[in-house]
Amino acid sequence: MFGINGYELIILAVLAVAILGPERLPEYASQLARLVRELRRMATGAREQLREEVGPEIDEVDWRKLDPRQYDPRRIIKEALLDDVEEAVRPAAGRSNGAVRPAAARPGTVPAAPARPAVAPAAPSPVQRIERLGAGEPAPFDAEAT
Image (cartoon, rainbow, N blue to C red; front, top):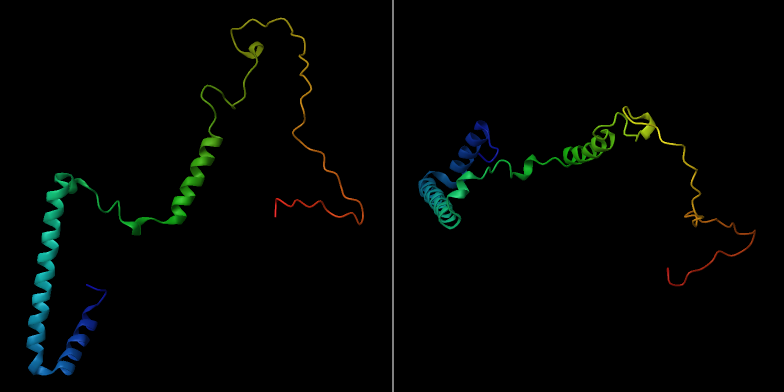
């Protein structure tokens, strides 16, 4: 209850008696009891109103699963990273190491005649050549980039 143990509750009761005095203590205790009853009545009313509006599905919800205190960001990130690694490491179905075997190496196939090596058309290289600046030469400036 509010993180208070038995000893702390006794100390609070003694302090309440000392501060309020024996004359006013029963009055404040009855006000506290009324407040607690009113809060319980309001909570029960809110629960019943929620059941009426949502329906019987509200009883089937596992509220502990939705508790934000159970989420550990380190565990979530670790699981997400390990899922990616397991998918990358797992071999493809039907292959021992993920490589495609040529037709001659497959059992039960007849090797075909050797094919001519195909000459691929010259495609532009995706790697651009880097030109170094000479000593004392200023770097190029792109006005739109800044």
